[in-house]
Length: 263
Image 1: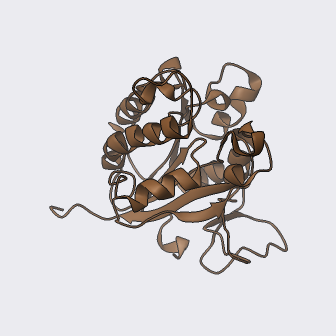
Image 2: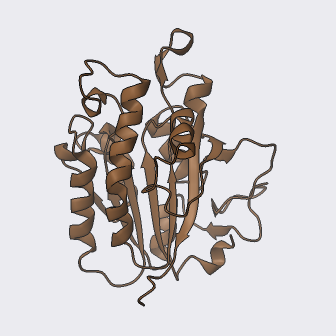
Image 3: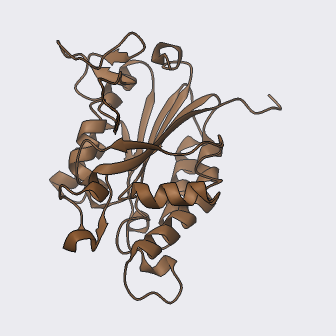
């Protein structure tokens, strides 16, 4: 994909499915259970995260370092900050002369919007304000957080409000908190988090994500991926911020939402 043909003419939607494991996402896609998240009919690409927890991964992604294909590289990037000697900046890479992607896209005429989810986007502390502060607009409410079983629905409600009046291209970033622990409430009868409740949370996201896609002006570049995975007892590990395969390996998809047939 030549990003020079995208930036300026397309909306851009970046969705991070916080903590989603690759193996769970791949199994569900192969079983045909992810019709909302992957409307293009494809599957997930297996990639490696640039960080093992939310802050590190997003700081890298907002600098243009999206999850990297697992095959030997170098792999050209979609976006890259000006950086002498970069081996992954290619002819189709959109290069921005700014410290981060939201600032770079704002300079190209985009309205940049963050709808946060997990605590690193809650703006309640200086640390929780760092990533949202990269955007011209940022939104977070407790209802968007990890303890609300309807978190994605409320996040999409807010996105609908802020996109109701718009002029020009939009870069919308949504950090989906539903996969993050606690997620046991998505699995009836569960009293604790597990790989199974993680999968049930993904089904919840799949049911509702189409409404978010429909908010974007067509054509729109969609990038949907995990920032990192999480462990549910593998080799004795629980959680993330560790160097384990289930944490470093993430699902990734990119596709263009084309114009509606009626247009």
